[in-house]
Length: 620
Image (tube, rainbow, N blue to C red):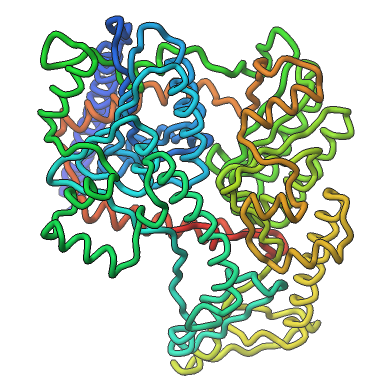
């Protein structure tokens, strides 16, 4: 028997050695293959100098979503996104890049026209669109023609298209103008049916973030406040389009009965309706558009010379110098975009710690004589907002002017930060204010009791045993409400101090109410109306430096991240091609949605559980 075990042991040891050898061989082969793919990817992605003929048209084919500051995509996530479903990857386009391209094309003798191809432009706020339309207006002063064409025009796409000298639409297409709205799902009845106990603490009549958890419909106060700024946005949209197209504002999107009657007159043809309403100039197929533009641009063939947005962008010098490389004094610029969270956060979110660090770096940089902080945020953590505001005050105390430029939204926590600036600039369509505060959570004791599950025990104080599985004690509810009220009082004091107002004056326009930039100017919440360039010019004037000496302050990527980001997209494509890997698009979409929801929950991590956020500032 002992001999038999010895033989079995010998056999098993050899099998184990074989498995180890095979595993190591496979890993080594995989590693070698991975290196080979990197080499192949590098060879295939060598930059080829972009060239284009003189008298070419610049095609502004914007593919993605407009942002103030693109996110830094993690290299690993980039590979995974390619693996799961590359179609779900949304490109981000920096508004400054678009404006820079248009401004340079205006004076470039090699560019003879601008063509707007907006089919792949994602929904965008009116404020972001007006940043680009301002550049289009300046471009048209060069007397170079602007054309827009498309199969369909969404509301956002059409706003930019309206600035063209001619709009060409596919005969099978249409113009889709819906207006602005703000809608939410309301969960009170579902919460009751699930036997959950919802605990909400807030200050502010108009702080409607918590309404979906306490009501089954929108309150009258919330409807009043929302309609105020939604109507202002829509009136701006229709008046601009009407002026561009030389039509009446009421004809941009008429009442339903008028629309139906006019649509009936053209037998329900949406494209013909757009032509009759003078929303577009001609109905042409893609082939006809190409020939038409070639003729208009004096091309001798059926095609015209052109250069696309990304190719032209690659040829343009950046308007910003990097911090640490500036060769003369200038204005420092920091982009603060996204939700305000605690700790260190990458681009696309605002970290209390990471943004404070950048602000203090600006304070200590001798080349930076003034600072422009561009805020595009609905708010978030009250703690992080105060952390950032304190750092902003340090910059001011160092004797450097601080100017805030508001993007699409600078509300709640975004306004908390902005209030510390020497000057605040906003666009008329900026969404701001929302000066209020809330805290909320749910407990499950009723649901557990229905299942026959109970929580019980003993503790040494009135504060032990707090749990989502237990009923919230009345004294704790009082304590939390007091902290929320204190937070609101602090918010009022912060704004009053920054804006040279009394807390009573702030309270009258606070209460969580949302305002447009135009309203905010009238109420004293901002100082001037204008874009980022206007804010930069104001900062340069205060610091007595050139307005074109701009120093970008941002968290640098590590060498590892920089190198990996160069490789990953091409590598992922090569891997998928070599291994013939595919994934179900529906599964990928579901996974992405679940991941976003989980990430959203993780965002609510304020140390005190207090939030100054305006989620209702998003329009649909």
